[in-house]
Image 1 (cartoon, helix red, strand yellow):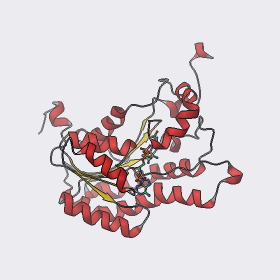
Image 2 (cartoon, protein in one colour; image 1 turned 90 degrees about the vertical axis):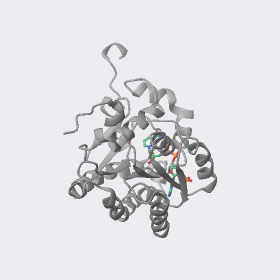
Image 3 (cartoon, protein in one colour; image 1 turned 60 degrees about the vertical axis):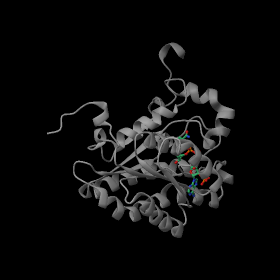
Image 4 (cartoon, protein in one colour; image 1 turned 180 degrees about the vertical axis):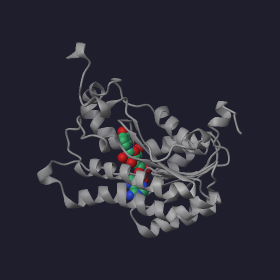
Length: 273
Ligand SMILES: NC(=O)c1ccc[n+]([C@@H]2O[C@H](COP(=O)([O-])OP(=O)(O)OC[C@H]3O[C@@H](n4cnc5c(N)ncnc54)[C@H](OP(=O)(O)O)[C@@H]3O)[C@@H](O)[C@H]2O)c1
């Protein structure tokens, strides 16, 4: 029996291969960097070549990385993406479904196309890409080293957002559905030695949060029990855990990384009321 609890062994990612969708910026870029720095061969994907090229320049300082330009909402792009992943990596043991979109508008003006875009990116595309990646993931899967699917959900899929002044109906609904899809897939794919988990981040700096931080940073920090936004290493850490040996038995979990915001429901400690 393996009783090596050293960090090097417990959290080793040696020999793994990963696809990170939306890996050209924000949380995806952070996770891609964390994997590469720990010996994982990575493919990132996103729609815009300039962003991918910029990300590659950064990521290649640390190790092997390729980029594939692909829109996850387009079926032909997803097929080509998986073909190129197999060519570049020779297999796939980690799929991170991170690419995501948001749309904010008051209820009466919330457009059908906005709702559809968000659901199609954050939910439909994740389902379709995952379904089509399973044969590849199965090839790398073993009882003592399962393949991994990590879905990037959101604390807004755990509660009704309290700090955003621009309503994001489709986003919350898509992330809540993604969390539940995560559980259903965990049950389906567990017997194939593939774990499926979700991370539900709170607020982190990225292009998606630029506008919100510009206008509501103080409210956001006040509503978080830790009174701050998240830092890059706090996403990198949970991603590394989920795909490492330490995470082998974690399956069907939705892990909030939000400083406790989703459980606080705006409640303040007694002496701050
Ligand atoms: N930042 C936060 O505070 C926060 C909180 C909770 C959850 N999240 C989630 O974290 C994930 C990453 O978001 P982020 O905050 O890092 O924002 P971001 O910097 O805007 O990153 C989004 C990434 O997804 C890519 N993307 C968007 N639509 C795509 C599509 N149709 N096909 C392929 N790639 C696409 C973007 O690149 P292109 O534009 O080149 O396609 C980009 O690389 C999202 O799922 C988001 O919901 C973020």
